[in-house]
Image 1 (cartoon, helix red, strand yellow):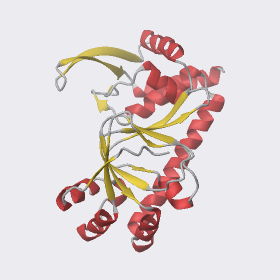
Image 2: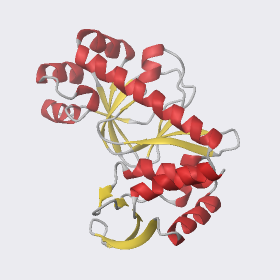
Image 3: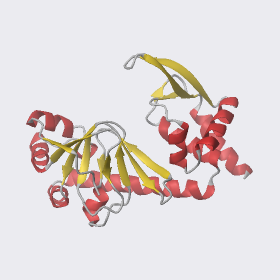
Image 4: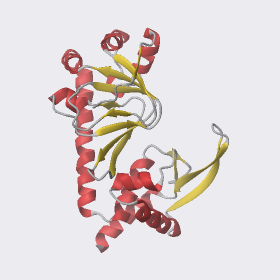
Length: 255
């Protein structure tokens, strides 16, 4: 079941509009539409490590992420975790259950304190019927999700651990920070355990493959000062995105 100790909050109208304006699904709509959405939403603040949605839940609300970060995961009966994706500000969660009325297909956990705007299924469907731009973005979002899941099934079925690791690093690089040329810095830097849950492997295997990629000069681990926390932290630098992508193809051709 969804955690019952979520803190309900009602932010001022201007704060609600500012947060909803950052939601990808609502980009470009007028303030009148945003106000309509804000009035239909229930705003909830969740704590770090709190379960927001549990797989097989029969509660069907759709939520917009207005602050913080969450992770979509699946848990095996033995407790092993598989991560699907992380969700940041502006993203939407729970839309599939809201649209088809079926139980939840995955678990969502807050990685840090987060603020959600929750919308009941009937309100979401009414919003999609009344505003074609929002409906079109929802269709694009669902198509993108389907493509992403298809890619994951392909990778898990056909690629080696190192290939899957390279593919995941390339995905993370899409939201990384350019560092000149084809170099990208991954911030925040995922741990070996995080990467293992993303590619259905084990931390020890990921550690070995990361070491091999470093020896080949494809990635580099560096230390930098974290001004916000006033301490040192480690970051991963992808030295050349093109070579990393070619590494996947090279391994495939040699398989």
